[in-house]
Image 1 (cartoon, each protein chain N blue to C red):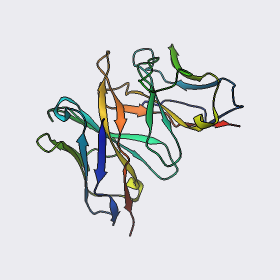
Image 2: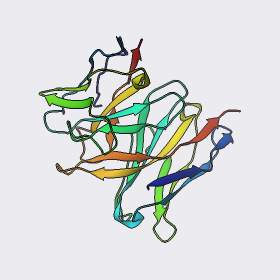
Image 3: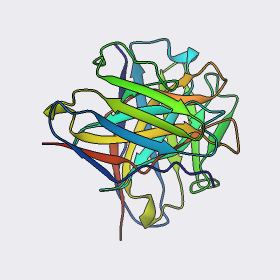
Image 4: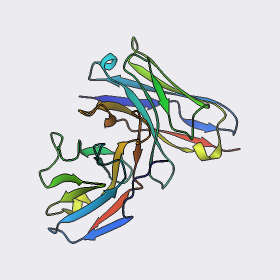
Length: 122
Length: 109
């Protein structure tokens, strides 16, 4: 069965960096795009970033563009989220999720990990 | 930026039909997806491509879409269906990534 396990969350000061990891299993990782989605405490879901199955394309939400970088290592079945210049408003539970490429050529999410909590605070 | 609009809350009695709507200008061209999130848990996909149900999702969950509105219907809602529900569609401005609605708290009591 599909398993996605995030790690790397923690408490970090504003302006500092953090790298999240997501280890995937139960499917052929190199055949799927991957997303990061976040959820601030008590708030709704916010799409953050997507990376193509081969890493050739990456897209970001406007709120993180220029500060966050998504990457992957298909030899390790792992996707990463490098978060730089962190702000208090980046505080959230960060979910890794598998891409579903639909019949109209658009991306969605089918499977989710359990999330890793990032707290940005001085 | 593109937005999907959901009602903040819907309330039904057990056995009644619950309907949760999601409106967005791009929905005529983009599929709607629905996710259930129980308290303290990760979201789970319950409807994809407007009306398809993943394996393991009860038949009482169904979806439809017409024009700029998508609807999640739970026929004969159960107490265990009490959750937050989020719609999602691809962003209207680009063909990659997407947007979530603000979420709807479904109360079944």
